[in-house]
Length: 268
Image 1 (tube, rainbow, N blue to C red):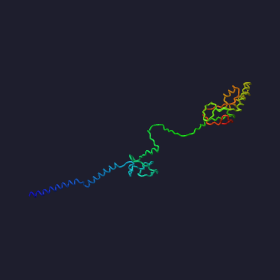
Image 2: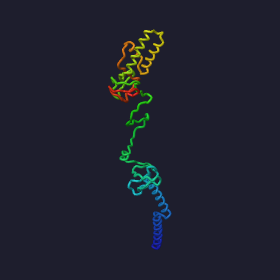
Image 3: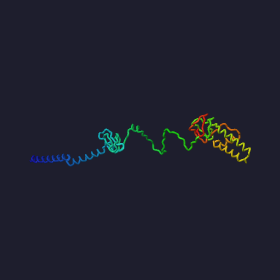
Image 4: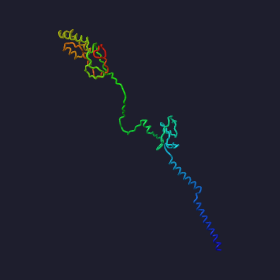
């Protein structure tokens, strides 16, 4: 009897233990819903990690992974992985290294290209906006300050005091001395009229008129008042008459040489 009771009890215990083991084994396995949830969670986490690791900037266009993309110089928003022309402006795309690119639209130029382009950098500062330019030029005289020396009498250049172009002269410097038979004759006329006026006195209008006419003729020939006074003082006609610079300046042209014969109105 005891043996008969022991057998069913043993079977019952075995069934209970087997059921417990089966339940525990099933609990350790993942149900289809839980597996799907777990798979989705893992995929979501994986995709998040992939998004975090996805290339950004110009590197996002580097499909072949060679580290080089091609970007438009005039239109930096045009980027592709192969060489070609910009569809907007038609210019050839520029190869750009994607290493270290953090933002789309950034263009990097190689040091050799920078050197060829002549790019220079400096610290920003407030300075006058000036530039030194070296070039060639030609000097031209101010027409409003040009003086032409053209005697009003004919004769010969006895002495040439300024004998080369480029000479610097000041007002009153002697330029040349001229011998003119007309000038000598007019000096004789002036001295004769002067002596007649002194002999006849100031009341003789005819003698005074002759004296003033001879003096005007000398003045018209650019004989200075000082030279006329010296003529009166010496009482002897001067063989040559010296012409002086009318202003400060530089001789730009010299059209005469010493000893040359000149005519009235000739520019010397």
